[in-house]
Amino acid sequence: MAVIEALTNLGRPVGTVDLLTVGTTEEPIHVPRSKAVGGLLQWIRFAPELLMQAQAKGALAHAKLLTGNRMLRISEAVAPGRFKLDDPRCIEELHALGHKAARHHEREVSERFLTSEAEPFVPFHGPRSDAAA
Image (cartoon, rainbow, N blue to C red):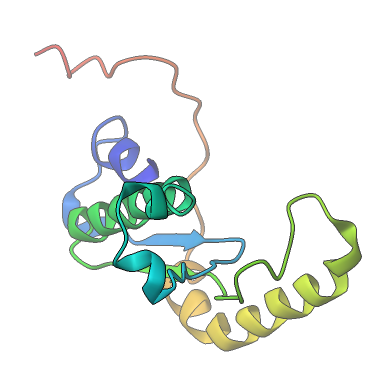
């Protein structure tokens, strides 16, 4: 996770990390009432997606806590099953969703992330020398 790398490997103080996270779309999980009150066999179809979304939401919540709520998440919610992985037929609609999200968040992204010149990138391939101390 980028926030962990910023705080540990790059030594950034907690209050200085402002995180931009851009998703590709999010599908809310809908569990029909008939399945929700059922046993394990009723839930088995929903379990993998539910667990994957729970893990992703948990990671985002941790990042938000670690940055002191200095995180901006951009990801459009779409109807379940609306887009299929690796299906190019909906590329124009996905492009339009991305363009809409960009317009909606343009001011905040510009003000928070594009107001100063970035420090030069220096590759880092191991533990910090002061981490052992």
